Length: 473
Ligand SMILES: Nc1ncnc2c1ncn2[C@@H]1O[C@H](COP(=O)(O)OP(=O)(O)OP(=O)(O)O)[C@@H](O)[C@H]1O
Image (cartoon, rainbow, N blue to C red):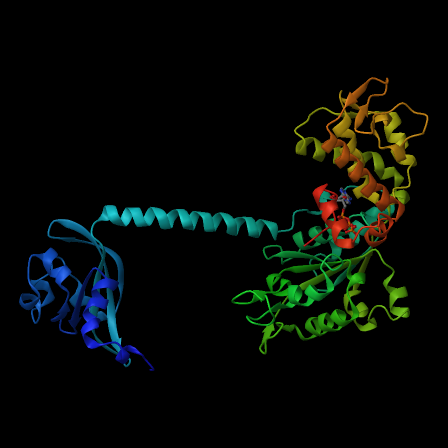
C-alpha cells in the first residue's frame, strides 16, 4: 500500500495521535499494552512508563480490549465505566497485512453528557435527512389512481378500461390526446396500478427542458463532463426512475438526435452518462404522451419511426372534453371539491345556468382550462353560488353584467366599482391572457408563447407562477 506517512517526522507522530483521539490505547493479541497516550494515563491516575508492557485488564477498569484483540470484532460506542465515570469507548481490531495483530481503543467522549450533546446534534441531522428523503420519495410517487379519473362518457370509459387492463404489463404505453385531457393523470394511474408502484414515477417534460440540457438531464453526467458540471457528477432521470416508470410527456417535442439516444437506451436497457465510459443497466417502464400527431411527424421525418414503434406498443387515446360534454357537470363538481380544499372554502354550489354555459363551450384547453376557469370563479366569488357572472370574459356574452378587472378596478355586476390592488389586477390579467392564449392555440404551449410574443421558457415560468399546469421538470 502506498503511504506518505514516512514523510512525517517521527517526533510528530505522537502529537498527531494525541490530537486525533483524546485518549488512546494499543494492545497486542495477548492484551499487553504497547502504546497508551499521556492523556489516557492522566485520567487513569497512572503513568505511561507504568502502563506499557502490562496486561490491559490490570490498567483499565472493565476493559474488553483483550477480547477485541482476540476475536477481531469491533465494538463501537460502548459505554464503559472507568474510575467511576461512564465513558464512551470504541474498540477496533488492528489488522496489518491481513493479519489480526492486536486492538486499538479510543475514548471518544469524556462522559455520557458530552456524548448526548453530540448525539442530539447528529440526531437532528438524521431527522432532517429523513424529512427530505420522505419529501423526495413523495415527489416521486404517483399521486393519482384510476379512482381520480372522473368521467362516465363511453369514449372516456373505454380509454380508462384499456388503461386499467394494461397497467400491470411491462409494455410501453403511448397516451395521445389534446393538451389538458388528462394524459399525465392517466400515466400516474397506470404506474399506481402496476407492480412498479413502490418505485419512482418520474415525469419528464421533453418540451420544457432546453435542448442542450436534455441529454444530461435524461442520462446524467460524470464529474468534469463539461464546464459547470457538478462535483461528483449527476444521476440522470432515467436512472432515477430505476425499477419504476418514466413518463415522457410531450415526446413529440424531443429533438431527433435525442430520439436516437433514447431508443438505444430503451432497446439495450442500459445507459452511458455524458462524459462517462461505463454502461449502467436500467430497468424502467416507459409511458410517453403527446398532443401531436406522431404518425404525421414520422411521415415528415420529424420523428423517428423506430422510436415511434418502440413507444406505441399500447396506444390509449383520451378524448377531448368537447367530445364528452356529458362529463362536464360531473367534472366541474369534482374539480370544485378539490378547489374548495385548496382554498379552504366549503359549501360552494354551481348554478344550473353556469353548468349549461360550461357545456356549451368547446374547451380547447380541456380539463385544465375547466379547472382554471373554476379557480378564477372561486377567486371572484363573494357568496356561495357560482354563476355565469363569475366566468372570465371569453366565456360570457358581451352584454352580460359581470365581475371584470378593468384598469385595476374589480367591477361588480351591479356596477359599484371596487379598487383592486394593482398587483392583484396585473396578475389576474396576466393569468387570463395566458389562459386565453392557450385556448386560442388549442392548448399548444409553443404556439401560445408565440401569440403572446414571449419566449417558451418565460411562458412556462409564468404558467408555473399562476399554477397553470405545464408539467415542468
Ligand atoms: N378525468 C379527469 N378527472 C379529473 N381531473 C382530471 C381528469 N383529466 C384531467 N384532469 C385534471 O386536468 C388537469 C390537466 O390534466 P393533465 O395534466 O393530466 O393533462 P395532460 O393531457 O397531461 O396535459 P398536457 O398535454 O398539457 O401536459 C390536471 O389538473 C388533472 O388533474
